[in-house]
Amino acid sequence: MDATNAHAVDETMMRRCFALGIKSAEQGEYPYGCVIVRNGEILAEATNRVARDLDITRHAEIVAVSAAQKALGSTSLDGCTLYTNVEPCALCSYAIRESRIARVVYAISSPIMGGASRWNILGDRKLSNRMPEVFAPPPDLVRDFMLEEAVASLYRNSPATWAFVRSRGLIGGDRVHASEESAGPVGVLGWLMRALRKNLFDRFGRGGPS
Image 1 (cartoon, one colour):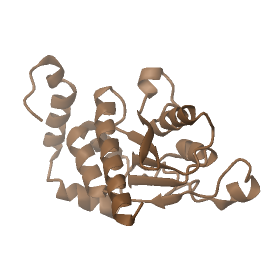
Image 2: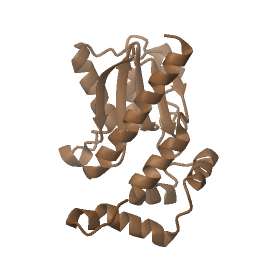
Image 3: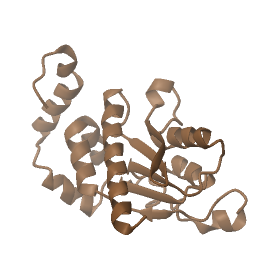
């Protein structure tokens, strides 16, 4: 696959993650989505399922890894690319390493919980050097991919979650702040009204269009 086609596949899959993130939020979960691909074909895709399954381990990446392994009939996902709209956490990053995923593409970094930007699990060579039978070498990382579009998607479609994670510093950085500003100014009252409309009024038929 040439570079132009590979980039087009990356864009398509990341936009699928954005759509899954919106679906996840509509299901009462955090707005995260994940897609796992091999040779341009989707093996598995998932939303968060923590609330649905009453299981704190059911992050979108974990659910997708499990589904992809079942689809292939193997625990090894070598040659696969994992896409996610937000950087995988430490828990998900260990699963990514052990499943031997070759490439990880994410949009928004997570400086508090991220498995690359804080804990560096995704880039840790000691795992594969000491236990090559279990852990593959670090996957290729593509960070901040389609960041502006990812920020706009969360900002507009999950305002309550965006306000929470931004206020706690769970996602951020200069590029995220710049992207947030470009999405349009929204004051505290604006955040509140959007959150109420999205999470309360619309459910009872009293909300206007988003």
